[in-house]
Length: 185
Image (cartoon, rainbow, N blue to C red; front, side):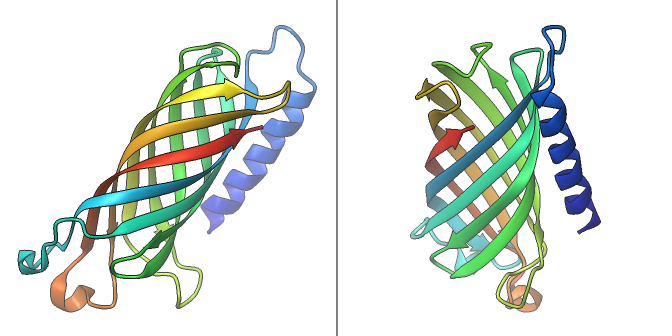
């Protein structure tokens, strides 16, 4: 939780600094928010493979990241995600670290690739804790106005979570592919 507070303060400081930049300043503030849907191609408990399934479930997540874009083509961001898995019906909230590479120097039309990784946060009894998530994807940006762009990306996602059945069956693992649509501010 302390890491989350430090990240929020750091991102707010970066935002304030980016508002007063001059032409020699090469970092920019980045805010990306997206909604994703994923189809799991496998989901199973790690200890007992007898519960292995061929991906008969879907997952949804709402994701927001804040960070800095530097050298006009790369970014490092931190954020939160709210993930919901349908098959075993659980909610998780991972804090995430995001690394992106952009094909275009500005946030105009162009392509990007990214890697996200994170760890689940325990907020209450309705959110499962322990476990992590990772996402690898590629996408396209389409400029809408001077202050915002929309983007669409395809990704591969892996997730592990310790559910209530963890002691008996092991960590629940999910692997799938998905699609995100989001806004860049």
